[in-house]
Image (cartoon, rainbow, N blue to C red; front, top):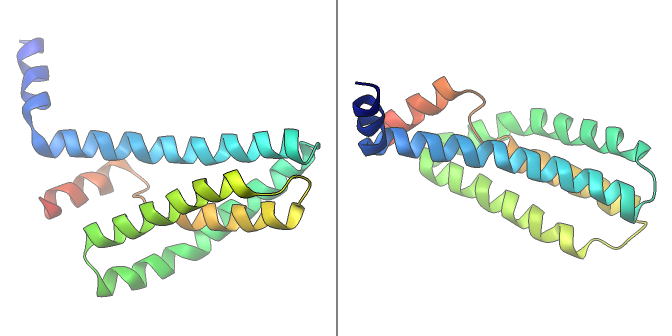
Length: 135
């Protein structure tokens, strides 16, 4: 009985999209957070900057939510999520080219990462509504 329920979930396209989207969303947050920490530890040489950069990233995430809501008025949900994912991928690519010992670029990266993270649904229930209305 348990395995038949698991099999039904795995065959559900909506559930699989929701599970993949939720997993990738959390992975993106951890990826940005870990890379910011590693950058502050090894490139800046001081882990005390990590808290500041994390607060900047969270504050920019908070400020970008109304911006993404405005974009959502003009574009579909899929296009808005794609724009946010592109923003986040560009942020990840920018992590490669940041010069060492540059606090200004690190803060700019924290601002950009907050903008990319803010587009993802914050809870599984909102992600479930997203997948149900999109597919």
